[in-house]
Length: 88
Image (cartoon, rainbow, N blue to C red; front, side):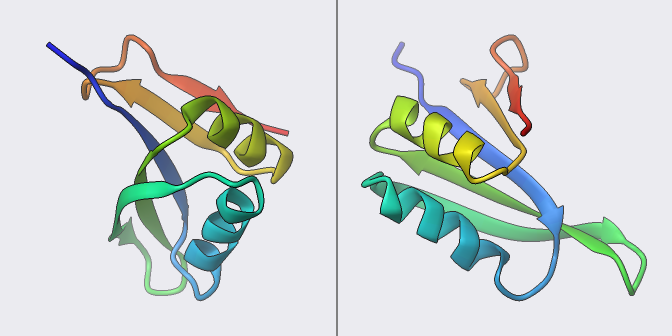
């Protein structure tokens, strides 16, 4: 069964976060195949949101997101076995 790796970024829900991620990936030449954005839980002042991406070039995306100082979790097939975290 084929699997797809999904990049998951959890960040404070505020204007500009999606644009920042899209810019980092676009500047690296990474095509975003699909994405979703959902606001999560938190207080009225500090809410966390989750961005989920499927990209055309996973390796290039990993490098770009690391260089862009973004924290990223990746899980293959919806599981946690292949989860990784990038932090700069």
